[in-house]
Image (cartoon, rainbow, N blue to C red; front, top):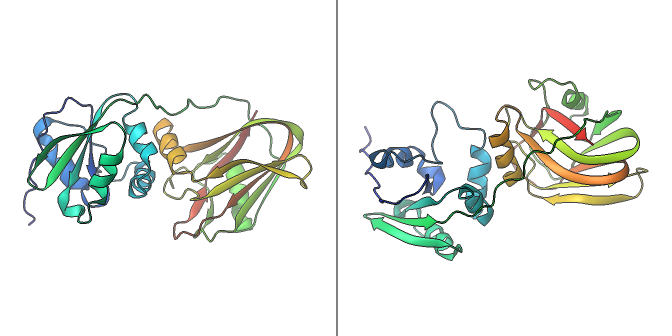
Length: 264
């Protein structure tokens, strides 16, 4: 039997608690918040929530955008466990974060208050779905049709991200495109770690409409629709026929897509 974790009583007037480092404090954070009946961002109950993989990824990369998102609508507290912070990097990250205030401390832990940021995710883009005439993939080409079958239980899948995966869509004719929606479905941890989206009218001259990681977009999508996890990228281009997705990271995680949509 494990020793019972100690309660973490901070007395803060906040909406929820984040325990760090998350990878090693899932159940401890849940248990330690019982005394104050505090909701927590950590934890699980028979399964991991669909936003969990992206949340963990953003935190472990010390991406400040996730702290702003967690505190978007109300103040939160962050409790850093000293046992998981031997080099002081987690406490250092919080001390350097604008607006974080040291609030309380105890034997083996320190807490910080984060004010409400107002940095909420953009609302889902509503639009008319456009027909996709054809689609090709450089990896697992046999299964790429699954992303157009309207079935969230089927998928296209790359076993791991090697840095050269490419998917190309042909809309059949040039037209106005508002956004691309990449649904991850039951595979929310298998988002592309570094994605470039390019657009073209003639399949010859290409322009970049998005490049970067997709962890925050995946986190937002999982909260909007936990079953679909519709990761959405704004395009807003006229006279567009071809769209190309290029995954450039090398990562042991796979890349899965259950549905791929283009909307006007």
